[in-house]
Length: 602
Image (cartoon, rainbow, N blue to C red; front, side, top):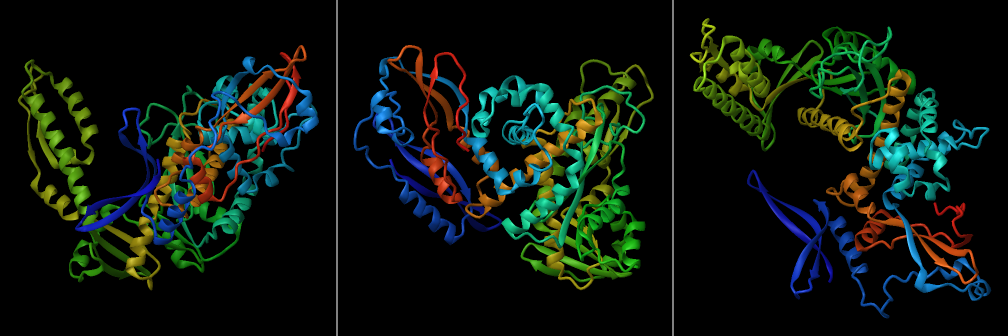
């Protein structure tokens, strides 16, 4: 049945939005037609819609000209001569399929690797060992694994490598995934980190025309499954955990990305590092890597200190900044802001501008954010009230200590909403069910008044306030980068025990993220709704297997390594990305039971 573009309408805030997906009508055995969802594309421009329509027309499946015999695999006639073909007799009734393995996603990962010219960068730095170990191929395997199906090096060695076609694509064998080989490769990477940053910066610029005038800076943490104590100076420390794992030691990862999500640099810091102590060192680091230039840094509140911002404004630095401010700053400036008029910058967004000491404060009110925050607050407040009523109406007496523990758990669930209530707990230790609570109406009114509103500050005093607000929203890109590192690339938890290998583990995850964001950039050009994970999962269905025909010559077998033919989903994606699959590998004749080194198909 034919493929077609299907439109989906969604109404939000009185406006209608149109999203697209590719759907196929499939006729079942009972002669019914069902709709199969093929790809979600999201919103499309007119040009993208026309491009996808043309692609669908090309891949509308034609009726087969000749029926195929089930299970018969025909060899590619270009790989052997007619004389050879005539001379080989095979037993068709005894052919077999062996060693199915995942090929498609591995091929996509290596395609992205070559797009970034990473082999050209790493080949001179990772020369083969005297024993013949190809360290470049080991690194490519580690990064491909981290991108496609991340896990430990032990799992790669024990399970994943055999179930993937990386060896076929790299013309290698299982020695590539020897456990000690994987760990020794990690030991060779960190010294080349700064060089890689500069190489990738040029590739982002050449491939996607990325500019580096605006930089997003933020920090996250990742934890370990290892037990202290650790040596003096070790970066594994207890600290504030963004992963809610305060029971584990951690390190802090500071990351700089462009507004499009392309990473520029990162640093691994001790797990007890305070956010506000990191900015000064990172400003110097970027200048040492890429030279002085006029750059705008966008950061969340809590990262810059007042002293660092004063230094930036006082000196002749070309650094510009746009940062969020803590709630305490809003309280201090509230009286001055009340006197100022609102300016509408978007239908649902308005601002107030307060110039002060070579800075400008931008007080923003967003209706969308207001309704979102209000709904979140009400949901948490209702859940908290319900829990407190349950404790009041408990059937058995509750001691004071037990009540405090239960209230602590309720506070953890409710977060800051907990402080909107005032609790009175009796001194009695026999039964504390008589505690009371009521809403602090003054705090509630202040909270409600500030919902959907936040305060920004910048030394871009002549900038359009609408642009400042839009730029600040770009911080969602660095949040997406951390989400990709932690979820898609599974950077946590870390099981390594040596500090250098811990940092090398993060370095491999950073390389995998570079491939991830490169694929994201390619997909953004064809359809905004396509995600890197969705495309990798699609291509993962292309398998490779060995097709073996016993020959009439005793002890000889004709071996084909073949990846399964791409279906319509794959062909459409390949056409849109302007990619072509490589040719199938030529057949080989081998003695039964012997392992043959087969030619590469990369």
